[in-house]
Image (cartoon, rainbow, N blue to C red; front, side, top):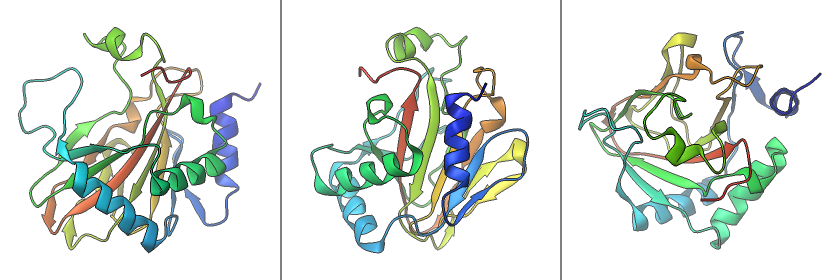
Length: 211
């Protein structure tokens, strides 16, 4: 029987210009020029206006583990509604399962060390973050600008590194076919060496999002 996640992967693979990483370890896709320059500029302006220091769940004591800034994007804003509609059309995922859209800003020297987007089932904050809506399933991330140097996203266990390019979509399934979390989705938002990196991220859950 085909699972929902497998159906999403098939849908993504059928999109014009979509590329799938040739690895049996995880379902990871990229599509260049997914977002227009104008929409990217509007989203960057929103991130600049609302950014704050990023945080992590299950704090590991490393103050430099995630040094970026984050912005919660208001769902009522036209630019946010536009990108949300684009992601829904692309993935076919019911918007009710999505977390609010989030933006991130990485200045020179900032990074997000190797991590997974799902919440570790044995983590001390697992119940806090997953009791209502379940764990994260799919991640959709869009680079909003070119970066002069650095800022790549590295999946070490897949031996794959994605360079930031304006408008490029990167997405992956955080789970295995049996529904268990997939450790192979460990990824590193590498240090920006020169310039600033802007991205937006959309996460989906197992059940409808309840905040």
